[in-house]
Image (cartoon, rainbow, N blue to C red; front, side, top):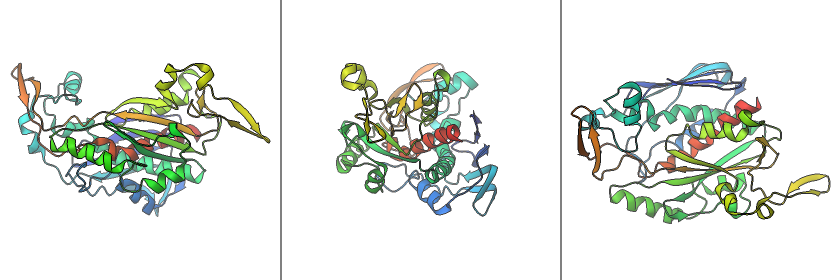
Length: 350
């Protein structure tokens, strides 16, 4: 079980990649009537597909709501998603043999695990229920005027459009990322993924997020900082290894005179000449667009032979991973990143 105690929300996720079902439990959600069709569309963005970048494991991922009537949430509720397409035998040769860059070895150190089938509770499969909550939070925030949109900015060495190149607003992102979630360079990104797949390999990516309509004054200093809250949720998405806000690490190469966000009046309205800080100063939202980016590592499960250890026989061995895996996990992670941002912001603004 994984549990998050937020300021307003208490979230529990129970289940594993190959368990009969996964369950989401939420306490403290505001009274809210959600759009089931919109939620279904949102969840479809995370689902596996017949595309070459996706795992062949196809699941229905139809959420069953408990304590929710006619699409109306009245505080606490639960969600169940069944696992129907399980093939544990794909992992029979890997008993006691941790897969490189997976959670397997750390899991063994923590719990003594030796059966790493499907990644257990560390599997990205659990993002199915994670995205149910994220989709609900996103709908609630949109009704309050806060809009969240993410897109693939880079895949491997292919660099696409970025908010750093200029203003990219919510409507533009949504209009251009239906299907494959990039603003441009779709064909080049797909070729990069396909090249890795054909070699039995995988490739990583960068996802950027823009939040429009964010109210000012959300967050605080030190432990209450908004960047810290967002980062915590973003790192809960499997494969995320780096988080930046605004111009991020690029600011470290510059001088203050270049990257400081100068303020000015346009009539009675305060505006910024730039937004290098990503809409957050001192851990508090400043009323301008939130911008952030995350780096996702390549899918660790690849078909190329790799070195590891046999924890049972205490020896060095080589393995070839079977099973069904994404050639680029970043593609289907885009709605997961939107979910992380939505959950963090809803918990803060309630």
